[in-house]
Length: 482
Image (cartoon, rainbow, N blue to C red; front, side):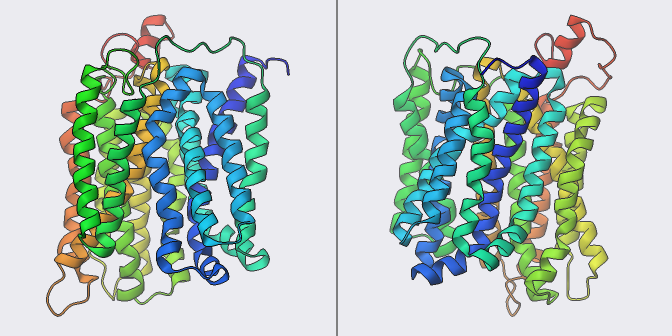
């Protein structure tokens, strides 16, 4: 296949990146819908069904950063194509699996290939687009993710009702072939040459163990409390984390986390912002569903309708955030986003049996608008500030945070519901008593506490006007202060 033009490469890259991210998001949301029918047909226990999600999350979380390192070394398009085609093949395997054991194993395989493709979706954008033009592609990717997450339950429900739960997994196959093969077959203008030195396999192993233990603890403790296994996992995770830090400090040749990457101005604060904001959002959504159904008395379908403003603002708001980001800079947009997000958490925390649909809709609108601003801004900062040669690792770190944040938020929300429930009241009242204010403070701390000190953004003046190399360098963070 002849090499496409620069514009064709950018178009293919954007379509592939958005499609790959959407397939992963869609796969996660449709699985929730088909789990009951999957359990009935395969005769599985509830714990086994839960492992269809847990096994995937554990595999993804442990491998994202290492997968990003592989992309930096061997090429993001190559890793993306491998991940996409492998994800489709594993999906097809689940569709024909004859036992729950095979489903769990293949979901873990899906997680491995999902880990390969997710950092590559950002790495490809970083290498295909100039830094000053990354805002809109990232916003488009965010909008597609929001659309996939919003439509996933509906699409999965329709497909499962008409064709059975197995057909839901076959949805991934045509998408994987449609974008995986063109990306694999396109001829590169220049071959990718691996840097000297080997891969940091010990560091990758320690990092994976630390994350595996952390994810397991975050999932297991809220469900079953502290047990010998969860306690052992927490201790092992802490020991692996300490060993990883010591190893990385002593490793000079090709460490898993390149020296100075996390010290690059803006990257660590942006990752922390994503972690806290996603924890606040998902913790709120977890308890919010109980509020809507048990306090207001909605059925699941009505509950889903009330949350639609969140999805709508995620889809429509991301491109607008890219425009605001270019006009006002990351600091102002992110700070505005966390304030709106915190306002949404606060509004939802005041929900009671008499709360009308309008008030609930405003709360979810604020949640979606605020988080869209945070996600687009922080992702843009991480991708733009990371050197192109480390774009995969930066993308892997960002995706790792986006996996840990929701798990952390749900764990915090569940713990608060259990521990802070007022005597004589339902567990849902714990949201008003503790979770609402706590998660509001968490969101506000992300913006008010981190951003001003972190110097996430360019100075407030508009730097769009000049097309000179100096101005481009200022916009992209290549020269001067960001």
